[in-house]
Amino acid sequence: RAKSAGGNRFELADPEADARAITRHGLTTALPTALDRGEFFIEYQPLVHLGDGSVRGAEALVRWLHPQHGVLGPDRFIPLAEHTGLIVPLGRWVLEQSVRQAREWRERYGDGTAAGPLRINVNLSPCQLTHPGLVQDTVDILERAGVDPDALCLEVTESALIGADDDLLKPLRRLAEMGVDIALDDFGTGYSNLANLRRLPVSILKLDRSFTQSMQQFPADPVDLKIVEGIVSLAHSLDLAVTVEGVETGAQAEQLRILGCDTAQGWYYARPGPPERLHELALVDATG
Ligand code: C2E
Ligand code: MG
Ligand code: MG
Ligand code: MG
Image (tube, rainbow, N blue to C red):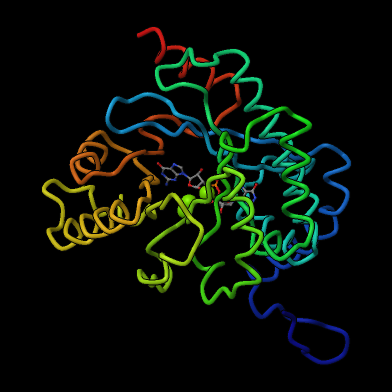
């Protein structure tokens, strides 16, 4: 923000904030046409079964290859896309690409991987949830690709569902009835209302990275251990599977496996990467 210093001279109140505002403005301007220009691409990060180490699928994570700024992570542009409404067509594009990718993996490997056909996780923003076309778009995309709904998992953050009324949950329920898994992303960061879980059509809890981080030390903080243990046992008693995010070390993976978590994701296994990378990982799995 500029502060008037008399005449037409302006003094920067906070040069860094100003630079951020300029970049933000530039990105907002470039965003609407970026989809048509083909500047978005998707990286895939494997989801690994903690029990046997097999690759079960991957999460699709969108990136923007900006002509001036290089590769931008979703934290830089998803909020802008939500603000401008571009998130709906962008989200649809991500879903379509990811589902097609899942079909390619499944065609290539079928049940050939250690754990059967690979599945795909796609993030949904709150704006997509309230968009009336969500269910039909998803059905169309799955049909066009010839992919079973049970190959797809849609990730919704806990905060997007806080205080959700039945109208908001209806499309998610329809998708869940079709066989699409719904995962509660970043679980444990919001005002987790554990009792609330019962009325949400979710089948997977994705435990936030902050829990994984607290497993860094060995032995881990006993209170954190109790909390994770409690969440896992509650989740399992409600028939929910537990996925952990942000696993960076073998010690974390081992601790979380002992605590009963089902699936893990993180740099320890692989960073998000191009789809061929998953081919390699899944193949190693199936043969070794
Ligand atoms: P998320 O869904 O919770 O995704 C996990 C994030 O953790 C990803 O960040 C991933 O790269 C990062 N990560 C994975 N393993 C590790 C690890 O071991 N250590 C650390 N420190 N980080 C790890 P990314 O790719 O920057 O995505 C950030 C967020 O952007 C995602 O969080 C998701 O909420 C959102 N996002 C990404 N793609 C999409 C999309 O297509 N649509 C929507 N609506 N949101 C998306
Ligand atoms: Mg996610
Ligand atoms: Mg997450
Ligand atoms: Mg997260």
